[in-house]
Length: 171
Image (tube, rainbow, N blue to C red; front, top):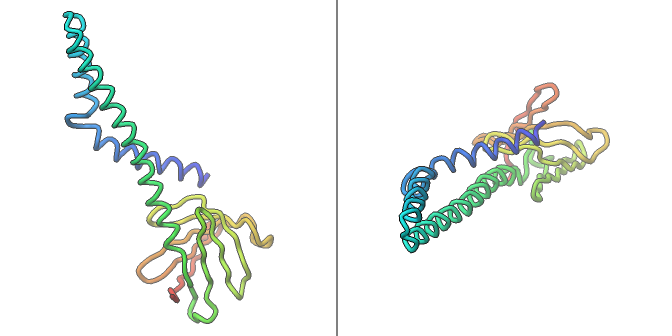
């Protein structure tokens, strides 16, 4: 469920950014009009003009496709940065017993002395919260957690029961 939400959210953000860029001189309406002009020139026998218009429309569409890919990459990068914000040491109150969060792509390695070592796979990441599931540490395997970095620290939320803890940064 969270992976599907993540993918949909990325596409929605990308689509919203893309819509903003779909207007103006290189927008869909303008390119449609230019294509109509090219068709009219071809029908009138002005093949050099038609070819120039077709070439311009194709070039604009190629540029738009590249921008679309870049926008998607931008959205994914912003979400990955949300995961990166978890890296560091976090503690309930005593930094001597802090949890060490290491981030590798979409994977979290958490070493927390009182509780053990965990590997978690990120299912969803946005600027507000990172949701992950435990993939190692049999006792906790499959457990879903939400991590929300704030100015005050890191809120850890159990998705199953809604309980949460606020950790402070120890770096």
